[in-house]
Length: 398
Image 1 (cartoon, rainbow, N blue to C red):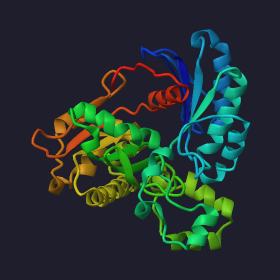
Image 2: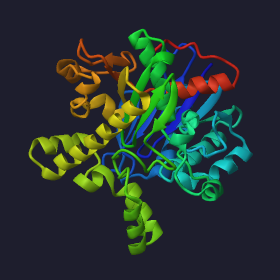
Image 3: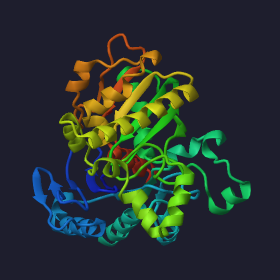
Image 4: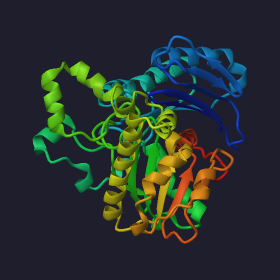
């Protein structure tokens, strides 16, 4: 079965063709959307993009590339799309029709950085590939197992019900694949593992996983809560938000929270690689940004270790989690009391990709294993779509 996976993020678009043998094939990425360094990558070809293209322009470019490269794609059995927020209505993958698209339109306000581009991509892809089924897979779905104590906010029941306010959680496609893959690496039953999963990228979240199920997660009603992110502040005192709301229009406040805060607000750049370089050269703002970033991660380590009652594995995934040895080392350096000890050499040398998707970088005598895991959301999405469409992808374990 051959499925084309669309993964629209806040700063990138990734397309990957997944077939039954998972032998590789057509891949396309647009990176750095909205930035000077925006580029289109198809295989080994890299094309710089001028004019800081926004998401709409990037999607139009992707559709044009797909038309031009039609022969490289070949016949498809389905197309799968990542949708960040499924709200109350969508807790499992769905085949997308006109009714489902209308329902998704109503959810755009809950994830304004992510749902609008995903829905725009769905509409464009359904027009381009009109004769094959399209499937939506939701980042919120994995967190449908949250217990009431983790899911509910301390608001009146009428308010929660009327506005649908509860903790939904995000990055579920990534977090949901963690326990089975770590279990395979460690040769342990995933159902017996207590795991803290750290998906660190432009967007970032952490999840406490017990028996393969999400029992708590750092993001909430929207993807604004929790960790410090590229342009999002993460956890904020609601009183501070009320004060800001008195001082500025709602759309200005929304832009501040979604586009101007986080690492960008602290350091003047959302690129963690640049922040690490500047911090090493003595830039005080960049060192502050790193310290706040790591402090928030440690905060959730402590909270989730307590909720889980112990930890067998800590997992780092996502662009930052996979590539920043510094963030991994600083995040876990205070966790020896839990029995988590990183091996400095293994951590520095860790390189994960599709051919070597998981590495244990914990010290030999560490009771808690520390795993670097290559994020493969497109593969996970394709497998979910194949199950829904009544087939099974025979993929190599990874």
